[in-house]
Amino acid sequence: MENIMYIIFYSMFPLVFLWFHLTNKLFSLLKTYHPLKYSEMGDPTLFRNNTPKTGYAFLSFLIFKKEWKTINDKKIEALCKKMVILFYVYMVLFITMLVLIPVFSVSE
Image 1 (tube, one colour):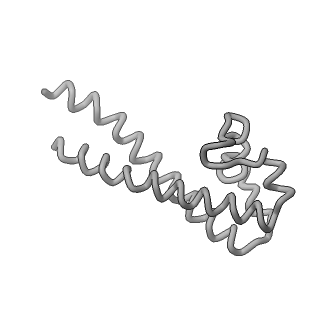
Image 2: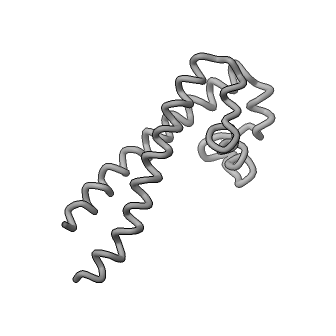
């Protein structure tokens, strides 16, 4: 049964890199085609300008307020739909790991 932990962990690992790739692509599209929105979000980047403020603005744009729906850009809309699905899949896997860790540590 512990194999399930390994399966979940190793399936989560590549999802992080996919998330980085999609996020970088989204930032690039916003910067190029919607510079006002990008600036309003605080000019976020993956690492250099990744602050709590820009992180919250990004999550508001993508998850909390779904501001990407108001932009009327098909490329950004398609990308954001994929990112929202990826976000929830990752969160389910992460929470599953958190729940299973105590279960497996008690059973030993």
